[in-house]
Image (cartoon, rainbow, N blue to C red; front, side, top):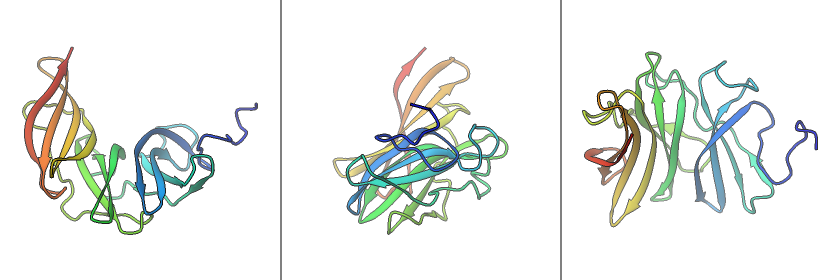
Length: 187
């Protein structure tokens, strides 16, 4: 098969670069997949990262949807990087690593009632800075709902110890997050 041919059982957007699927989630009768995306180029690095978006009912036939996240705010003007999706109260929420022009990494959220059109939360970034246990590489938020609370796990590195770490935050409403500590560490 010629690598330029459209794939038959894997999703590929009509144009642009695709990487790192984010937040496979079931919402409003469809499975949604979000991914890091460079919509105007076939290679990364020529424009800030966006979140592409597609949905399916059967994982064979895919519908490409409008771009879910654009890097258009002061807190994400260098990109909307990896994250996750979660459903709460019939709303679809996207959590992502928001990267500023100065390469500062924070966590921001967008939400949607219809699963297609997303609005960034006015209190973004919802996690404004890495804690003392973390470092400037502060990314890939993963959010889960367990026993009545929301938890966000974030990957980071510590510049002094040179270790990788997973940090955990807790929330009751997906907007106000409290840092709880390190849940894993490795060299």
